[in-house]
Amino acid sequence: LIKLFNIEKCSKAGAKFDYEKGKWFNHKYIQEKSDAEIAEMFLPILKEKGIDVSAYNVEKIVSLVKSRINFAKDLWTQTSFFFEAPETYAEKDIRKRWKEGMPQIISELITLLEGEENFASAALEEVVLGWIAQNEYHLGNTMNAFRLAVVGECRGPHMFDITEIIGKEETITRLKVALDKIQPIA
Image (cartoon, rainbow, N blue to C red; front, top):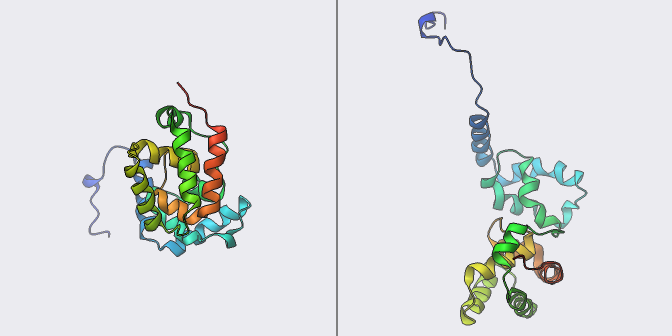
C-alpha cells in the first residue's frame, strides 16, 4: 500500500457521504438476501407491533415486497395491510377511483367472491378479470377500487397475491367495511 500511495492522486476536496448511494447499496444487499433471512429481520418488528407471526407466512409476504425496500424498517410500511385491515382510505385514491356506481360494482364483486372456493392467486385472478370483462366494467377503475378497499390505498404487490394471503373471509370483510366507510369525493 505504501508503494501504491501517491499524494497527487488525493482529492483536495473534502470527503462526501452520499446518503442516496448508501440507500442504493443497502437495497442491493437486501435483494441478495434470501426471503428467509429477510423474514428473520422482520420478525422483531412484527412482534413489536403485536402481530402473531404464527398466523402468517412471513417469508411469502416479504418475497412480495422485497424489491420495494431499502431497509428492514421499510418492511412494515410495505406490508402492514397484510396484518391489519385499513382504518382509513387515501383521499387521492378515493377521488380518482371511487366514482359513482363503484359501490354497486364492489357489491357485485362481494357476491362473486362469496361464491368462490379457490382463492389461489391465479385462479381468482382469472375469475375476477373474466367477470370484469363480461360486465364491461372499466378494468383499471374496478381493480383499483378493489385494491383501495382491501389495502387502503392504491399501492402494493399483485392484488390477487394479497387476497390469497389474507384469505376469502378477510377480503370480503374488508370490501364490506369499505362500502360503509368510503364516500365519493368530488
